[in-house]
Length: 144
Image (cartoon, rainbow, N blue to C red; front, side, top):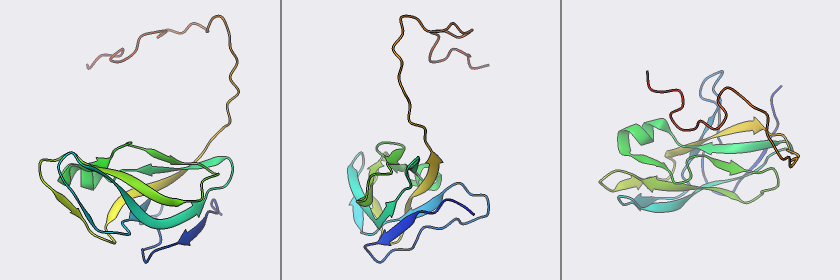
């Protein structure tokens, strides 16, 4: 049996579900209609509230089809719903295209993935351990 997450619908929207066995995410649907103009950002309601169990987070991710076909994404790329949050899930949408995009009520606007999280204990030290990479950052492995 999987992770149990309580959900409260506060609008007339579809309940998220896994479209295919083995999917990692469930679609989230717009609970309102709005138009996103080019380079505009808007917070779009999903009409749901959830109770994420302690030790987990809900990740809110963009839909690849919206990004490729219409230039629509999430302003924060991946959002986090912490286990202590009980408010409505709202998605910060952004239009990266050159033309307006109409978000219709009931349309897919994101997906939700649940992930286990660990509480880190930071230990301040004078030096870190050495690796073969060390401080090499962006592009350190090359493009070939």
